[in-house]
Image (cartoon, rainbow, N blue to C red; front, top):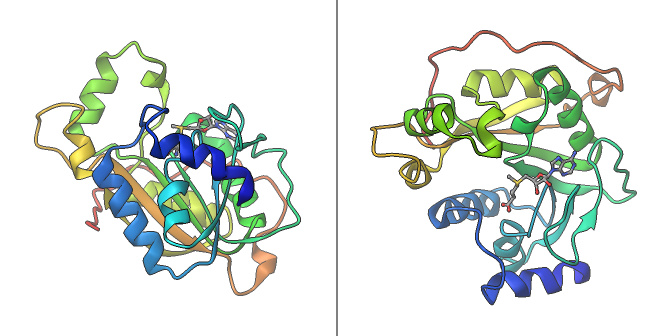
Length: 220
Ligand SMILES: C[S@@+](CC[C@H](N)C(=O)[O-])C[C@H]1O[C@@H](n2cnc3c(N)ncnc32)[C@H](O)[C@@H]1O
């Protein structure tokens, strides 16, 4: 964790502009604490905003990012990254939606190779009307990112050979930053586990499209 000490200090001292909405950070931290993990690795950790509260909770934290925003984060592309160490939890937030849909199961598989137990992913919720309306009109870089239902995100984890443990929605307050429309929360998430029979996470690429949208919703 030493390598990340500096970046976590920069966040705490307000030197880095916050990306996350603060209620989400709390919801995320409380959820991870409930999993009783000792080590966690974030893929696409940017400036370590989600690693900082986990570190404060006594979890040994690590992070990689293809374009790190601060010193201390290991610069690496998840598609190439190898690590001898395995982590109780490997997670991402705001990462998967930037890949073509057919590549996502392979990214999740890659995350699973770094994990001893859990893989956890947060992505935009296609049922969040305020976010979807905002996305339809913005010219910002994130206009082309994907959005998902819980069912679609679950299927991508199953396609990667993982067992879904739990799924849900979070980021109710964050949704309000996109607009005043009554909306579902901004994010959907899936917590998955490596299967008991490890052989089902094989090394073959998956390249399979997710099923059509369903109306299934779950609250955290
Ligand atoms: C929306 S940001 C994530 C924010 C982060 N969860 C946080 O709380 O600050 C997505 C991050 O994923 C990183 N990223 C994109 N493609 C990646 C890849 N192939 N490997 C590793 N990181 C990647 C980007 O550089 C970016 O910092």
